[in-house]
Amino acid sequence: MSRYLERAEHIARLIDVQLNLMLDQSVLTSEQRWRHLLRCLGAKQKANKLEELDISRALTFEGSSDTSIVNCVNEARENARQVREQISSEMWEQINRLFHEVKRAGSQRDWDTQPLEFLQTLREQTHLFQGISDSTMSHGEGWHFIQLGRFIERANNTAILLDAHFAEAARYPPLESAAEAHLEWIGLLKSCTAFEAYCKVYTADIQSIRIAEFLLLDAEFPHSIRFSIDMVNDGLNAIAHVSPARNPERIHRLTGRLRSSLRFSQIDEILTGGLHPYLESIEKQCNHIHSAIHQIYINYPVQSALEA
Image 1 (spheres, rainbow, N blue to C red):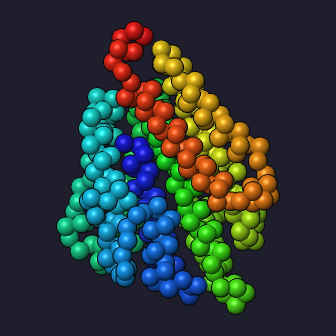
Image 2 (image 1 turned 180 degrees about the horizontal axis):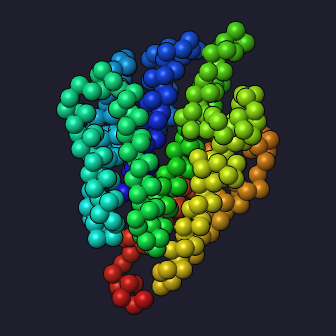
Image 3 (image 1 turned 45 degrees about the vertical axis):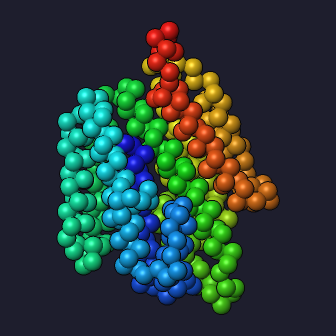
């Protein structure tokens, strides 16, 4: 549930930023921009010619796509229904409101006339769900799983986004497009809700190396990969304390290895070894952590639970 809602908010934020960037002069054409957005989302969609309205609608309302908002909201609601007795009534009501808001917008022409307003509403609704969860749910095992899902998804999304953006930046035309490329770096920061936070650390001096350092290694910014993995580690420790019968050593090894890499790495060392392989390794490690959590806490053999 938590991962799907985080993904829906992430998709909405990226579409919002891309639509706004199209209003400015940009180094990317419209078609290049939408292909770039698909890469930033890790989408597998292929098309000979991408039409702006069609692809933005597909990312929002295509029910069969893993990288569509409506699919994420539908799956989140279904998962919430399955754990209905574990969440508060306010949480269930909020996720239902979100579900019906997306369904209503898809059946009407809200997207065609006011896409930015719809995306903003959706983002606010997902943030509201997070706040309601924190305020109305006991901060026990279930709540820690919500945090765990949110931050695994966030770390993975940020790694994919950084990887795609830096690969695209390497293809920007040289010096004469510096102003347009500057807009793309600001767009990356805004895609992670990081522009103001970045400026408070580095002022308004937009440099690609500093952006990579901030979104990878900052210990205090909620959308940095390091912060997200720290939160994953804290959630796992809390769950292990509540459910000591499980055997979480493998998860802690995986998380501890990734956390140590982020805590003790320097950006110049990462860039020397290659940013792409480093980010690709983070994506793989996030997937391994997810699989281990699912195996130990969700899809475990019945006999092992009885013996415990």
